[in-house]
Each structure stands twice: as C-alpha cells, then as structure tokens.
Length: 291
Image 1 (cartoon, rainbow, N blue to C red):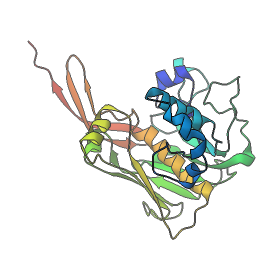
Image 2: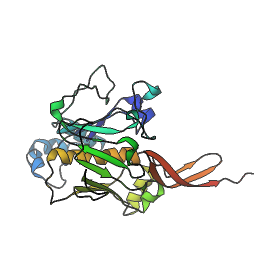
Image 3: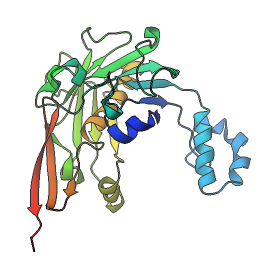
Image 4: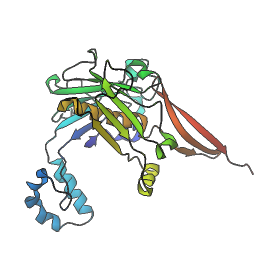
C-alpha cells in the first residue's frame, strides 16, 4: 500500500493526521519467489532490471508499482491538522464526542484528489456506490477494551455494524519486546473477544534483527488469520485489513513510546492501557543524580 497525505499534516500531526492508502497488486522483484502475476510480466522487465543497481532498482520498482491499477483505497475519517486548522478531529484522547472518534472508509478503485482539499482529507463527496465498508471507533471506544466497529458495503455510521474488533487491555511500550498482542474480530452480537471471524496478531520480535527494528523504527509485523468456517466477502476482508492498519496507527505507531530521556531523568514506559480511548501509560521514572 502507498500512503499519501499533506506534508505539513504528516510532519506535525503523525500518526493522527488525515491520510489515504492505495492498495495495488503485489508484484515481487525479479529473482524473488515466483507467482502467476509476476510470470506474465517477467519477460518485459527482466532485461531492464539487469542494467539497474542499488537505488535505481528501488526507484524502478516504486515507479513500476505505481503503474499498477488501484484495487481499493482506504481513506481516514479526517484527523488532526497542522496549526489546529478547522475543521479537524481531536484524536488520541477520551472518545466522548464524534470529533474524537477515529475511523477509516474503504472504497473500490482509486479516489481522485480534490485540489480544494489537503491530500488525504475526505471531501464528503466520495461515491457511495464504491463504498466497500468502514471501521470506526464507537463512542467511549469500548471503555477499557480497545474496540472498533465494522460496517459493510454502502452502510452509514448510523447502521448496525456486522462485526467488531476488540483488542488487549494492555499493550505497547516495552511490552512489545516480549508479548504478542491479539485483536479479536467477531460478529457484532457475539460475546466479548469471541474471534469467530478472524484474529489479528501483532507479533513480538523473534530475533535480534526484529528486536532492533522494534526498538529503532516504526516497522511492525502483523498476521491476520481468517476463520475458514466463515465465508467473508472480499470487501469484508478488506475492511478487516483496514481495521488492522487503524489499530496500528492508534495504538502503536508513535503513540506508545518505549522510553524518553530529558535533562532530569529517563522514563521507561512498561505498557499502556486504553481508558475510553485515551492511552494511559504505566511507567518507571529514573532521575539523574544531581551534581
């Protein structure tokens, strides 16, 4: 997927900024594990590929990927904007009003950018006939259990959801080094954390390389396991994928630091818990010894 957003909003307000994600077919690089999609294109690009090295190969693959058709687009329901421009949302806080709810809508194909709006912001004129589904926080955000609601094709936020995603009570911080975090995807009327539709898992590091990536980057490793006994449509699976991306933006991507150092001491964040949508840290503070 390729994310697009306004530069100022991304620099000042990430990860709570408005954004649009465009999902295209996966095309592996020449020499990678083969697939039927790539086999149809391999002969056309292999000769050019042999003449490229280093950064040129990365640029070539990026440009080649951009030429593929967009399968579906994921549009965030607005977000926080640079200099607190209005209208905007107030995210990463107590979810007591609609302006505090985070969410994403999924549309088939591509969505053109409106020159009158910042890149990544919804225009409220998105075609309803292309709506594949949505994932949104409910009011109060599940109280102490991070919760998101799933809705289907052409459903509005006033319609009853068909499913829900329920996450762990404790997550993030240094606990990411030693714990998997499970998000249970269930039918809306099922019991708490039934997971009868799918299971989203944020994986803990398995070796030193992934531990360094966890410590010094925003890269995360997720798996999604769908229940083979339940027949979900492609649109519903895309909505579950959007739920995984939204969970990463809300609970892990920059919102749950592992440590912080200032002139007075070091703060180690053990884990976080969600209280009506607000992320409350459990931390250890070690002051520096004064001279």
